[in-house]
Image (cartoon, rainbow, N blue to C red; front, side, top):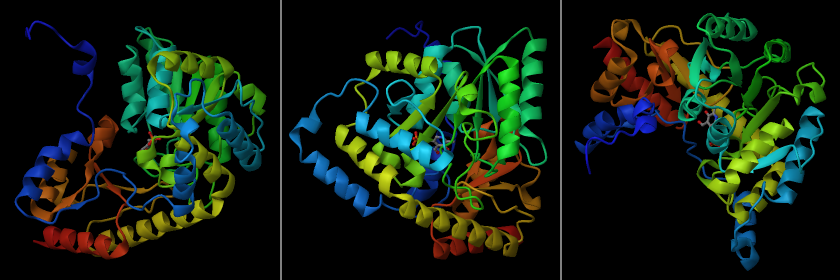
Length: 401
Ligand SMILES: Cc1ncc(COP(=O)(O)O)c(C=O)c1O
């Protein structure tokens, strides 16, 4: 093919956070090394068997093998609305205000494609889960980052970014937020979330809140929702949507199922785009997800406890390894750690590369999540304590060598 053809959309996207480390990991693993890979936040445990059982049952029904156009199985959308009602005391109309997506990533990307265009400005967290920056870029909009940092009030950080965009001649059309936050593991209080939501409302922008880790708030169990943060939910529905994923709460990452609720026009725009793009998630998966939302609270409690135990084990192990001060996360499945003194002069990518090559431990470099991630590495809590201890032992030997 002629080299003259440019692929501007693909070429404008930076290399995906986790792909950047693949070559070095492959090189080290192919030499026979047993690499401990704590890079990608890919849940290691299987989906709880009662959920898998529902999938089997629904897969045996031939009618479930057909296309299923629309916003997702009505029974699942009703289950989503009951889940919100039970948990956050908020009512949604399953016909107009809820949509099933093929994972949160798909929902976020296609929502941005549906509502943003060239010249629009989205205000996104920095560091962030990469699609929060990538989705506006894919849609042709620009992304202005706001820092997510301990001690910095989220509403203030967003307000500063909106002001910065305005100084550059842009008006923020969409704000993306994500609490509990990947990659830093920070959670947000109901009050701070309320301040953030008010601030976005007053700015005139729309809000997309990614609540993928809503079940992984270690202290509160359930993190606050934008629809239960001190403002009337009906008011928040005027300009905001929230996305929740089945991937982390139920170890269903490979199943590709999530949902979005909130503003009717935003939901309708996503639904409209998706009529062209897909026919939704395989129906047996939707049946299993509906069962999980109705019956799975106990399963989620076990998963939350697992990540909290692993986080404590890792933080204690890093301290014993001489890594330096690493705060224990308040939620999610990640530990966000400043580079240890021995690596402090390196970039995050250089440090992560050295740890793969010399300690045989793979981590995600902070800059894969945005410029604010420079100087940090992210550990994904996807191994049990014996393996976490082994990783910390390797890091101790590396740091003391
Ligand atoms: C903040 C955040 N949102 C969404 C996702 C992905 O969700 P899904 O598997 O539903 O696409 C992740 C996965 O790591 C995440 O960290």
